[in-house]
Image (cartoon, rainbow, N blue to C red; front, side, top):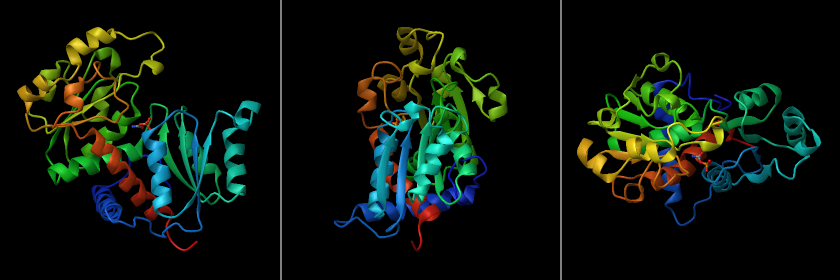
Length: 304
Ligand code: CP
């Protein structure tokens, strides 16, 4: 597999192979000297057209741990403002020697488009519009797998703004590929039009959706992507779908509580739950470095 554009099409075996590789990388990260020379002499360019903290920083860390040279590019302050196209920007960076291009872009398909235009460089999708966020999905699967073991038959409830969420789309595919039963919950106004086609159930009531769930995956309410205002309001959302310690105690006191971040405290999750013992939110962040190291190693490693 050359590029990482989507988790659609990955087999169960491919995903578990990646998770095993990530576990080796996590072992490396626990050593006093963490760096390995797998990407020595290679140039990684991180191309971010949208804001990011976790994905951008963890890709940069992963690249540095593998000894790549790293350039961080953001659209603000670049020649994009002068009208340069995505294709010309990418060709320019490839002409300067980029071996890996990590891209986050607001347009669906931006990463695939780049992969079709670049001659040599490996492309990693760090999120394209509301379409896909494959590396987030893989770090979520890694985190759940570390806690729950084989994910076959496990129950996953994804709660919140599914309509605008590239994480939800990728996670639905990833968890289902590993044999999980996935239920969505949230206001119908924040659900995709055809939930049935995703192979998941929809349960409006959050208690019924999360009853007995092994994983309760909360999504950020993406106010910036909602052109017509939020319906229901933030207060209503919190009242009916906001996750609390009380909810988790009621539905499964052992449930893993996950969230891709950034979190809206007091909206989709109360602080006590985000910071409590069921929460693996910061562990997801840590897993992101190991998983991205594994992807970079498998797709771009080798002799420079
Ligand atoms: N989960 C995630 O993609 O976070 P960032 O937007 O901070 O990268």
